[in-house]
Image 1 (cartoon, rainbow, N blue to C red):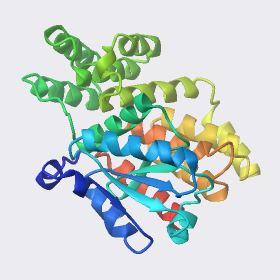
Image 2: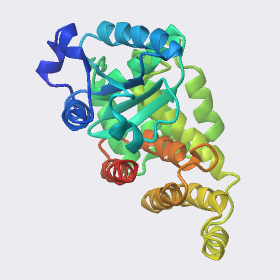
Image 3: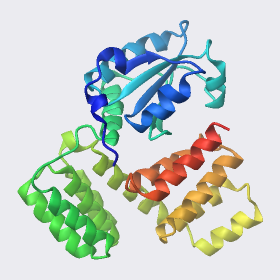
Length: 306
């Protein structure tokens, strides 16, 4: 995970929130998000809900003390970028990290959900990461898991939790270890036991996404059969979505990403953006530094900005 640069942590509030434009979007948002996550608030002076959401977002960003930044885009004054991102209603909020859109929502949210949204983005960028004496043990357990020794990894993660019952990385790792062992119910039970204040930690979100994908795979169907359906009708988006799920379950994550990107390319609005949502869920289930995540986000971004 890319950590924040020192400039981000020392930024003043006036550096954290700014007005953006079509001309400055690449610099203010895309490039800036390579150093620290950037929230983009698409609004207009005549928009009532925008007047509620904007100040709440600004307060949450300021409270994050440099872990995230915010750029405000007046859609009336900046139609180009609004059109490229297909902003159809306001307020709309996008979150960018490492040059790519990674999250977003439409409409006003209550303060608690805004704080959660900003907190998740801050954690993605490196803010608030855990750093205790058990990190080396977590790293060792992760190596076991990657090497296929899921049972040994589960034992190690469980031992870490005995030492530190609040260790989010160990909770997430233990859940993923059970998933690797095919014990989906046990993985869910682990996450259900996560302390409330750790429920939104990136390690927990990753495990939760992986469990959701595992549940979907239970009903996806055989890969060969789904491939035949997609080949017979390339615009059968449900079959393509099921194929992506089945491919991921079989270990072909790259193939799954390819299918979801193809669905997005053909009809990004199908089923309320289901292909994009599934992509983000798959990205969440992978490690942030996984090359497939970076490549997939680049390809998705190129389609969004095309």
